[in-house]
Length: 238
Image (cartoon, rainbow, N blue to C red):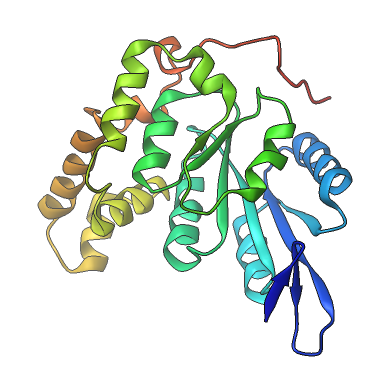
């Protein structure tokens, strides 16, 4: 099986389109994004939208041609991190692109520590969706609003994380994903056959690496956590 002009050549020399999945509960955005991507690269890609985790992994299971998954993440909808964790763990070859409603700094740090390299803000132009399709899953890309509006403190923190020899350990990522998936530390400890203290220590180590004191700092949308909005290039989806 080989690839020619964005299509996958099968043994019988037929061609099939690669598939892009958009996982977002915001029906207005995923309709807008689907329409944009279809118009821009419809000759090379099939664009499908999914709205829940079960459908997302069902589509992956039945389709070997998935090239890119755009997945919306909001710090208040913590269980989405569990889906992102499973995507990176079991499907590292798929290009996973995280979409944030706002340029939320703690979410960028969290995504980078989960080895997500391509992070877009919905405040940016939809053209960014198209621009990342040539990137490798391991590449690093932040859409313009992050870089244009980040203050020195935020940029220093991002640079420090990029200089780390490794991100979170597999166990630290697993525990954070389970906690964000609404499991308590006691339930995680019971399932792992270890003490609650051990789980708590892994969580604490992960927070220290990311530069946070508590999980509240990651999910709390206070003013200092959100990059100032650049209104010139914002997209308003109605």
